[in-house]
Amino acid sequence: MDAPNKVEDPVKKRLRLSIVLFIIIHLIYIHKVRVESIFISEVYAFGRLLIELYKLFKR
Image 1 (cartoon, rainbow, N blue to C red):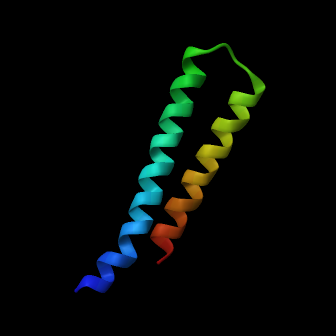
Image 2 (cartoon, helix red, strand yellow):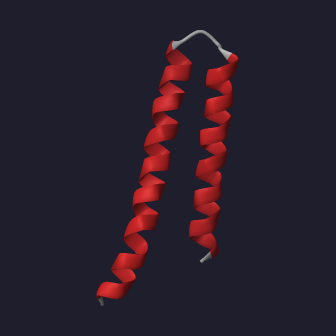
């Protein structure tokens, strides 16, 4: 019973981290003037989030 939890925990932590990172970058992007570097960071974070979600549902 411990094995499945040990497998799922890192995935959940990574997913949570990706979501938090995306939200933080999104908030910065909303509050600041449109800067290319921030926009690129947001696109990258959103891409990472989609990849993590895809990996999660693919299993």
